[in-house]
Length: 449
Image 1 (cartoon, rainbow, N blue to C red):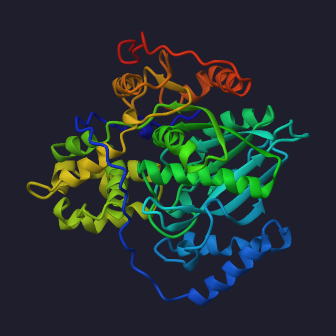
Image 2: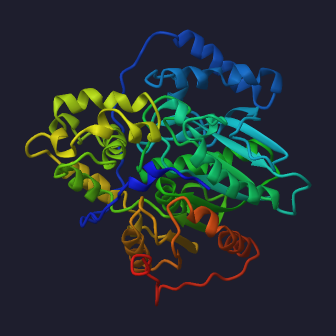
Image 3: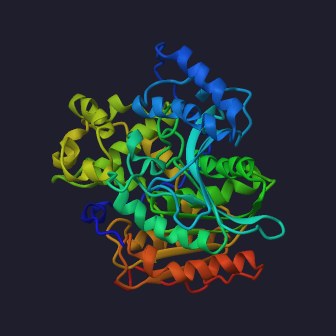
């Protein structure tokens, strides 16, 4: 159980605009010449090593270089011929990021596609249970994590017992470890921009989803006994990513079979986060999350010009977000202490930003498999009314949704109190049982407060 008061202050709010736009474009990043030769040598070694454990440290050296210098545009992040989900390297993992019940844990680097369809290198973890796989292979869960930060050290696969986001990550790992203990393979992407070059696709649904799907392909290169039937699970930022993963999965990876998805307290109504900050007159924990979103959206939507939104001093301090992770940003520093409205130019050009936010709203999605939607009534991070609205929107467009609310459960507390329900629901999907929907009479997390 996590007890991070700072996360209890994040707010995502209603954005009335619902225009659907799936054209994601990534802007060019500044390139650096230094270390290109070394990176090319490392990449060649990584491509040849696969699972040769003796070469594993060399295989991961490129990832470590990028983590030390996230602005480095590594050659491996632009490999036009690489297949989606191609495994670059796999190294045995025994850090805090490993799931303790797994017989084998791996830190992997793999290829995915950016929202503009260019190649990117992504990191993540693969956890394989003990014993012999069932006929058809191990059942598979792909996990999409909540907000940890933008800096390389914030990546979940980099977690340590004294790491900056260990409290939150240990809470999610406890839930995931139970699945491994009961015979599931769990794969967990860091999202693009953490393990390789580029900017994290923060709340860019297509980018998050592709990272979560392609790690399943990479996992089958690690062990062919990993099955092709899967369920997506995610929390907070990862709840939004979960819904996008389930929406695009059947078309993006037709060799896999989606059985369902579990979205826990998903981020939604993103546009009003911006609108609330523009008029905010007191320091607000909204700001650190807003800086993540602004940087991500400006990278993937070139029509968004941050200099037409933020004042020069605010632009100068965007780099502060790479000095620590989300808890650091919420606790102290420029973004924790500043007045939100003072960061914006007079009459900021918000139209492209709000359009991008609307395109990343999860309630608009069509998902061919059942959805389990989870929300705690005492969540101060994702407002319960927003998840109520996501449930209504998903039902309205024809999805099969089982929406469950949990009295007095906090944002992270719901991971624990809903665990047995989640496990039973996932088990039922793999058992071939029909999922029930309560779209006719959905509950209300907001009304239960």
